[in-house]
Structures are given as structure tokens and as C-alpha cells.
Image (cartoon, rainbow, N blue to C red):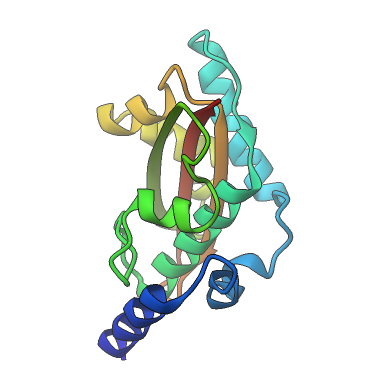
Length: 174
């Protein structure tokens, strides 16, 4: 089933135009492109850390929100924590395909942090997830990248009872 899905995803990717792609992504885009209460908490937790380190706050961007939700949904479905999509997309490919492009910008950068924690536990709370990332030098570097200004977050619960969290961060400068 997964192999067939990956083949279908690759075939569709090869044949889809930018206008047809959203139809492929209905599960991630079905929710409004505004953050949920849980997503707002995660953004607030990231901003608290950034402010404590004298960095600019990040603002939610719909293209990154959709990309993060898409990836969180996919991770929960696969019960797997990886930066690469099942169809082979990297983070850069995923966010570009979902609208956070470098086109028309002189500067473009992105980063991603992922987590999976037992759903419904204190470890699944936004502050706890961000604290865990801050204890990892690689995750910390993404959250505290000075040029970052944009964020999108997504969470999904898998059949395994784990909550999958994706935070996509970026910056585009004209």
C-alpha cells in the first residue's frame, strides 16, 4: 500500500500543475488556513523563546501552516518521524509546492523541527515540546535562527497514540 501510494504520489507530482496540486492535499488544506488554539499555543511558545533570546517574533504564514499540517498528517498516518515526505519531497520541495516559494525574493530560507510525544500527556503541551527542542543543539539552531520571521505549525495524532508536531520556519526578503 505504501509503495503504491509513493508511486502514485510521484506520478501525480510529475504531471500536476501548480493549480492542480491543492486537490492532492485535501486532508491538510481542509482545515482553515488560520491556526487552531493548539497551534497558536505552539507559536506563542516559540515566540517566548525567541523574545528571551532578543530575537524577533515569528508570524504565522498560511503557506507554511498548510505545509506543516500536511507533513504532520502524513507523519501520523505513517507513524514515523522523518523530514522527508513519503513521495520523496524534502522540506524545501514540500514548502515550495505548497506556495512558500523563493520566486521573486532575493533571500529565502527555511527550517523545520519535528517531535512526537504521547498524545494527552504533559509532554505534548506546546511549552514542553519547545523546551525539548531547546535541549537539542540542532533544533535550537532552527528555532533561534536570527533571520527567521515566518512560521507554520501542524499537529496530528496517529493510530499509535502519538502526537506528531511539525514546525516549519522561514524568511523571504524581496
